[in-house]
Image (cartoon, rainbow, N blue to C red; front, side):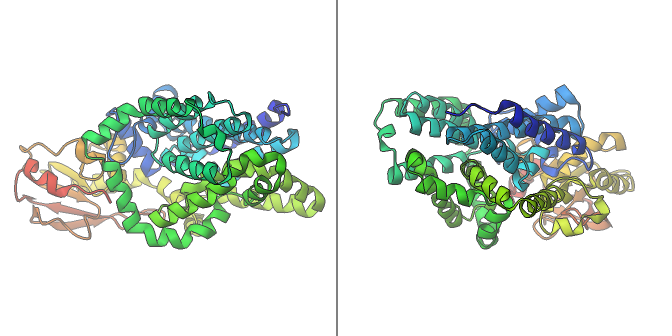
Length: 475
């Protein structure tokens, strides 16, 4: 095998880390990050919409590096850097020399989804690394035929199940790929069941938690499919070309045509299998991105030859693509100029305006001196109030959304006025009485909280403990 180009790949990684660190605090927390921090403060083996690893990483990062966007995102930056290194190792595994390894690292580092997931902490951040690492271990298994690599695959899948269950789709797609294109010999070894057992052992606490709570992750997944499935299917194909620089097309062609890489053909089959599964399920288009990165590594050398063959045009095009990807994925523009970007990447807007949102809630709360409870419509609102509220004299918020519901209703003794924050399935829940709107939040960007209603209700129709089961919602 070629030597690993540690120095040159290290330069690519260092540049990515420098850019991400410089921009990590430019806007603010994303709504999901606020939720992860809240969940991390309530450690458990699982949550209704996610396994435990991301909240635990959020807690560790803020404890070590500070309770700020920059501190929280240190761990995301490090995971993103590790992902780029593994992509380069995949290129090496597929016979790529120094230039191919560096090209693979650079293309992955400059693509929109890897940039975005390395910028802010999300469940996709660690999931991407685990998919690519599992792909590398699988390629080593296919190339060498050494069954012991099933243990590495099993361990990575087990950790993946503690991060995001989507890694099961990778297992399914690669399994079909091996059956169709080989090498089937890797299935005829007792190391395979040993790897399966190891994966189950590593994931056991998370699986047990989900089982004892009636598998709420599946409920949330079915809701995503029902609510967004049609839109996801329409956008799926064009987004495959936008999320990662489409060098992966050359990677599929190389894996399928190159006789020296016959042992890696299963990856060329696995990607279309994954796409079909996601289209049937109505999954989000970016769910396929982690499998695209090994294919980018396979096609990196072809991309490099194309750029070199065109010199000025090729390098100019690469620079333009990189610049566009950075603007779309990272907080480069001032918030006032975000409108065009939000049409492509709405997640940029979800990092702007949370302190101002909490200011609006605080003004409404202090306008009702006898108010006793703040109830929010979604976990982002609750997370923002939990983080920024104490400095503004606000009590701990409550929410019936996702895992906030599990963290309990207000005490039954709180029977005074309630401040409702946000949308509750299109209107004020009938369980609340004497409700009147008192304000509307107007932020600096047109994000999901723009126009949030703030409503004061005189009380509830029954004690909180009786109402709480009826208020629960996942979407």
